[in-house]
Length: 236
Image (tube, rainbow, N blue to C red; front, side, top):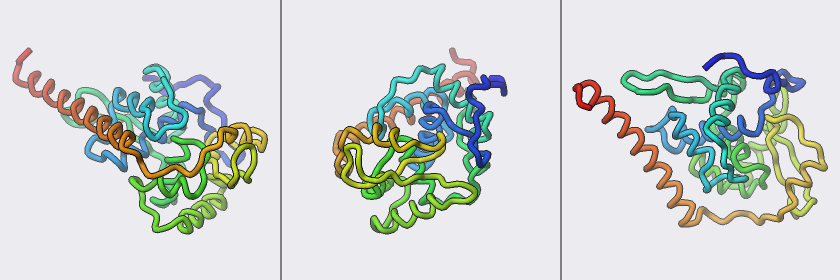
């Protein structure tokens, strides 16, 4: 793929950090998530990345992005120095990985986990973030999540998250990421309108879907290795 992308994806925030489209935030969030939860299958093939973007568990909103949209978003992230394609020995196809350290070299594991979940599930409370980051980076309590959010709100050279006061359908304050630019108060209120209580721990359905997703990635990886072996042996 070319290193050129349409100029519409080249906006930068006032601090010089590239402004991400929704598809780019979904792709970046998936790469961050899978690196932590399925390290044996990371970096991801484009097929695995496409499945991760559209999976029904741990996503809000659930999407139906086309393969071309995922590839375009990956290309946009590459242009913005936030992802790259890697060519592994013996692999049939290049694989996708994030390079968020290029733009945020001092991001801690806890901050990265919170940012990942905000990218994948939109604005959330500190309590929701504690529950939903458990597989990525365990926080001892909500207070630790809150202190990490405070650090991210004061991040230099520019904040990574923003506090959204209670209102617009939510009874408590929430946080939203700023990688897609600042969020106007009225936009925050609109996106918060459907009231959602603090989410319970992962349900059996979510755990099952996550397991199935992981198994699909493993099967795809094994299928690729089998095809490579057949090719090396001259077997059709």
